[in-house]
Amino acid sequence: MTVIVLTNCPAGLRGFLTRWLLEISAGVFIGNPSAKVRDVLWDEVQQYADQGRALLAHTTNNEQGYTFRTHDHNWHPADHEGLTLIRRPSSGTPSTSSAPKAGWSKASKRRRFGRA
Image 1 (cartoon, rainbow, N blue to C red):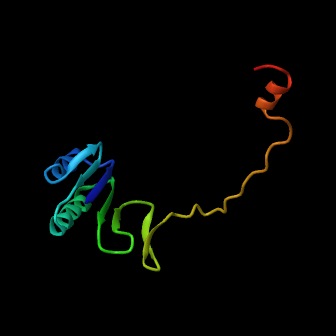
Image 2 (image 1 turned 90 degrees about the vertical axis):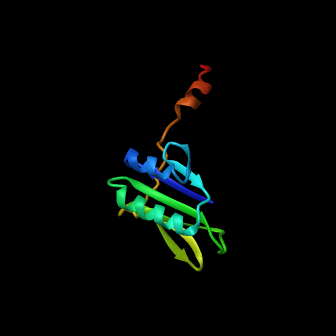
């Protein structure tokens, strides 16, 4: 099984992919082409995606049962002890949780004073 997801790609590329895959939703293509056809399709997607992003996921013989490739995504696949995981970009600043505001919430004030 092969799944290709396109975001912000030219309509001509979507039309090209419908020759071999079924478009089940806008920009989401599925099918079962051979490995050679899948690789040729992915090469075409990378060449004609322009400013868009693309993701290819397909079944393979590994521990997870699938693998994926990305094109112009902020998230990238990373191998971790034989498993492919997604590496998210760091925001540059550590995430800090803000402390809750002092006082009563609006919902508790309504309950407290009998206003539904």
